[in-house]
Image (cartoon, rainbow, N blue to C red; front, side):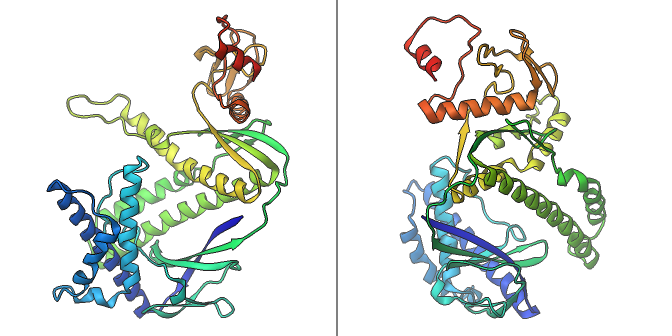
Length: 408
């Protein structure tokens, strides 16, 4: 099988290289926004979407524009990649996978990519890399890079510059080390509850640093914008954000690695996190209810990193030869896992942590019950393609669908 891997390292740049990286990121942002404006103008005129092949023809005239001579100072391939990124953003929008592309803002997710491996010289022995128009650059060599180099992305985060190296290599089809199947119910009180009774405590990295972050944000708001003191406070705010993100990423990697090494099948809920964390503020005409409480819940949901947790589980299970199955999340915490019952009712969940079936009296931790039901749905989906459970406590007509569900 073919495996794509990514390795991220911190760059050790001199002053000239830092200024060049900032300039190249600005050029990439300028090309992206210019192409986006062209697409929007074209659409407003009633024309069809401009494909990448067509919009790429505008790149040379833009670079030759005497009013923007600095475009020629940046590598040509990084600007082509900006147009490809925009084309991919539109493609994801047309497929319903993302929102409509927005203009890129200065200072937010600054990056640019070198897509041609022939232009890249990677010297891991001496901890350095050579990129077009940047020359040789040192980096903090923290791990071994395996595979054939495909591309390099330079990005800025927390006031530091990093490079991400993507490699490709052929590996044998792996055989999973674990043989068990497990269901995972994610939450806030417990980050994850496994169907085998194990609980994983939440990290809540943002909550731990929230007061300190607010303190420096207040300080920054009292400074003159873009002044020297404002930049010092902004650097402190950026560092706190980096600490929060790094702690969360480290926690998720350790957790997912442990799960993937010990199980061959992982069943999770197919959560729509963006919908779950939507603001309830409403409008002036129709104001929302419990806005403050919902805002706190949204903050807690986003602090867990459920989306990244699922992404890591999927690729790590594939690397280990296992499988991840996502099932519908409806009623997982309200359905009785007792095979002779299966009663679904809101009253089954007495409190946040206590589950007691009103039909058969089955008792367990509510999160454990949810994970057991998730595992059952995953096995049902794997066996017969029908993930939804059947309420066996309710008498139903013997239809074909009923027989299929009972047979599962």
